[in-house]
Amino acid sequence: MKTQPPFSFLNLILALLFLVLSVTQVLSANTDDDGFVRCLIINSDDSNAISKVVYSPSNSSYTSVLQSSINNLRFTSLSTPKPLFVVTPVTESQIQTVVYCSKTNGLEIRTRSGGHDFEGLSYVSQVPFVILDLINLRSIAVDAQSATAWVQAGATLGEFYYAIAQKSRNLGFPAGVWYALGLGGHVSGGGYGGMMRKYGLAADNVIDARIVNVHGKILDRKLMGEDLFWAIRGGGGSSFGIILSWKMKLVSVPEMVTVFSVDRISEQNLTEIIQKWQYVAPKIDKDLDIRVLMFSVVNPETGNRTIRATFETLFLGGIERLLVLMQEKFPELGLVREDCTEMSWIESVVFGSSFRNGEPPEILLNRTAMPKNSFKGKSDFATRPIPEDGFEGIWEFYNEKIEAGMALLVLTPYGGKMDEVLGSATPFPHRLGSLYMIEYLVVWDGDETSPHISWIRSLYSYVASYVSNSPRTAYLNYNDLDLGVGTSYLEARNSWGPKYFRNNFNRLVKVKTMVDPGNFFKHEQSIPTRF
Image (spheres, rainbow, N blue to C red):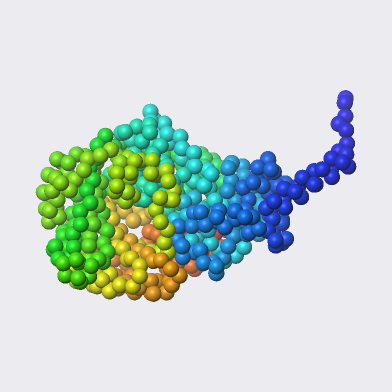
């Protein structure tokens, strides 16, 4: 039998030289971090390829890559902790290697898909960490015949919606209205949008998924089991692994839908209109979604500050049927034909993303079409109508906020399909009994943060008596570190855990303990292990 020649000394020298040259391309000045990169090189199928997607502070592209998907400028200051490395994998196997090497070298992972995290948890940590940026993993495969699609976690909602529309005018997907959100985080936190009352959440329409677990293994629904599949559809995927892709069940949409955006101010009986909205919007036809965006403006006629409410609607039908429905159920709004426009579903997505100048659907492929700001958000769920004096008190807060910055209040109606799905069907518990969700948002330019944070905290405190209680609940995708932080079971159970998940929290802890007992995948509000 022919024997293989021994590995020569020259071969060994050449191999070591290649390793050193590859490593030095990405190492930072801190040689204590060398182990991570060496691990990547040694354990990669293609060491040259992975060296091209690893960025350290010594790389000229490090800052631009780091900041490319930071959409909350509150976390771009010099004092914000920075990752030792940003890795932008182009293959799933590279993600497996990053998980292994992060564990081996004692580094935490922050996984970023769209970068719209309210508290920066997908790209900031107080301990040594690596950002795993999924921007290069954004392939989309739509099968119109079966009305399904596989979507990688780095794709945006806009890219997904556009891909669907390229295959069919009669298919859509019930996810967020903001086109630039990343699919990885949006869906794993629940994900709601203009078709929620008809078809439920994005997470309700996931039929399969692929995830890298703590052992670096790739699992689909069959391999991961129903407990983990349940947990990642509303419990936050970053607590359990790295979401690679989702298989979505697409939904039926008419060839033409109707939209309107109608403004009313305080002097136009806004109090009466909002009172009626609270009773109508959660109970009206499931084809109709009427959300309200409110903020303070100056009334040009009086020069005084007033509240302007914008009623934005997606209706899965034509103008005639919508007008009849509105006249019967919500005449107080005073909707007329001239307010309404029929368009295709994909055009309504453009409209809902605040593009109002005739932009084509291709604008949804532009991740940077909108400016970035600093912001802080909070959320609530109304389980009963807020009385007139309650809203008037809220509006006083908004009218008094006259310093630089904009404050927004968004009311999103529930009901419809949301009343039909059990609160335990997924980790997202806010179903029957929730009339609408409230989002509070303050946005500003500049470095001064304290006044804006103080303002929104005061507003949140004021509203407490009007919303859900025991616990006062919140939406995971609008994460809020004011609710509490901590990676231990007791810390989470006594603060933020039940607020996001109610009775589903303990089941999430059970799943976490089973699949990641060492609590490797963690952040300030990740699901803890039981012990």
